[in-house]
Length: 110
Image 1 (cartoon, one colour):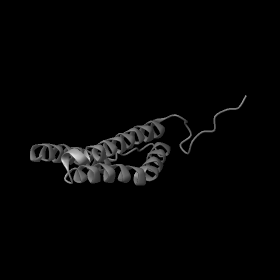
Image 2 (cartoon, helix red, strand yellow):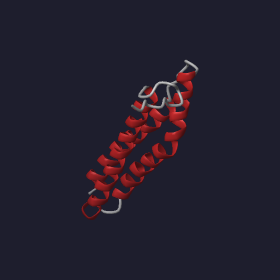
Image 3 (cartoon, one colour):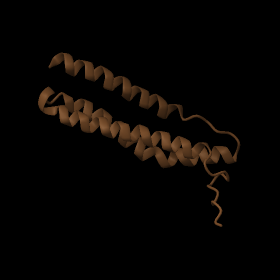
Image 4 (spheres, helix red, strand yellow):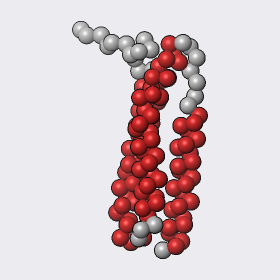
């Protein structure tokens, strides 16, 4: 019987993996929303491209920083000093607020 090979932090299935999966779900939600915005383009016009750009940029930023975030979390577990990635959370929250405000503006303008 094969045993699971422990990850870089020595405990498979621990926090870095769950956090990576959560960020992956957030990224996929933003990609899905981007596709929906493109579908609304004929009805709402070119301003909808702002919503598409914000959601696609947020998804791209999550994708680009995912590996660094995982390694930092695994390193923190090894050293028993895990720090929260507050900048990533603040940037994602800012993108969500921007999408909400831009969405209201686009709907009211059309």
